[in-house]
Amino acid sequence: MSKRLEKKIFRNIRDANLKYRLLENGDRVAIGMSGGKDSLTLLYFLLLLYRYTPLDFSVFPVYLDLGWENDIEVMLAFCEELGTPLTIEKTNIGQIVFDNRQEKNPCSLCANLRRGALNRVAKGLNCNKVALGHHLDDVVNTMFLSMLFEGRFKVFKPSTYLDRMDITIIRPLVYVEEADIIRFIEAKGLALAPNRCPADGVGKRAEVEELLNLIESHFPGARKKFLASIENIDRESFWT
Image 1 (cartoon, rainbow, N blue to C red):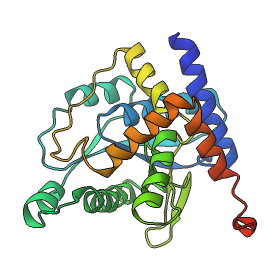
Image 2: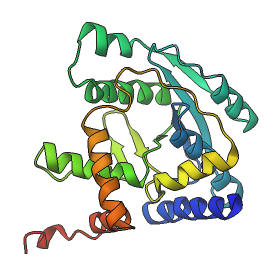
Image 3: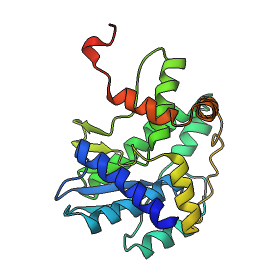
């Protein structure tokens, strides 16, 4: 089961890379690490992509310490086992979001601050790309969030160039389902770093995820169809 699952996830990442040219020879890629299932899976499979394809690139795992005193020993050991030392950047983002600003909806501000900090660390490592662990479910969840609460159609792009930073954000897991990531982590027996963020698992994103789980239970494969619909949009005939 583990080998079949690895091959499936590897194919998903390879196909996304071939379609969107996420990784190219000479890239230096900072990987945003949280100690959660998505970032551990991302690091593992990018190294497999390096090993089993002609692509020649370098990866640099980066962990932003937000001030929650999370136990990251497992993540440190995982990175060391893979031969990719973890860069740790201490920040005061948690204090800014929850103490100074006391945000009612803290996730958006926190995400913006984390993106900025991660991009700055990546530039300090001379990286030209930053890889994030957003998977297929995240893409679809974000689309529904934007439609339901913002009245617009907005999704994560597999690749986004930030001209102000001169850095490209890539999402190699865009074709990988969250269920497969969970199964992979369980099959590997990988322990996850606990997240002590006060807002973890609450808010509108959790509500939308519950809604999409309900849709998926009635219409298996619905998330894949939603993603295919996103990719197949012909914007010129969108209203026809």
